[in-house]
Length: 194
Image (tube, rainbow, N blue to C red; front, top):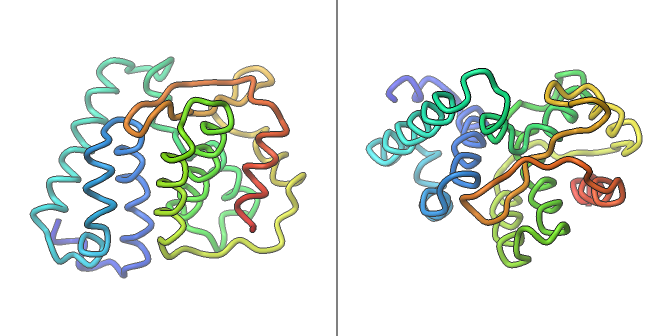
């Protein structure tokens, strides 16, 4: 944990997207704790709590990999926020946006999709969106939604002609879903630039 002091805060904040992701897909209490203590955690003012969060993420990842070593099913849950996040990184040609920043935006979009498909409550969606919206990150400008959608075609988890999205059915619980209506995907992407 001490090596984190060698990073600037932008990289710490970016890296925390993965920690938040684990709370959203696996552990509601973890998400609540991170949300409540976020400023203290990214400022490295509570290394014991930070270490506990990192350890918890490692255990959650280990458990899912043991269950799905070859990435055929449950392990895909680790891609929450990444389907759209990877498309954003590709859209910007891997410049001017950090991976974690793209994942933050992906988590907002994929939470929105979860809500619009009636898996996630509006209250939980707003809870996620409002929290992630306050996290400092590169602002998205001048995005052409149609061009961004084309980058979804290159997602590494795409099967056939369908993207797999990780959908929250609650904070701390997720599932894999495809056949997402294009209109909902469009709205989830437009949401990022408003």
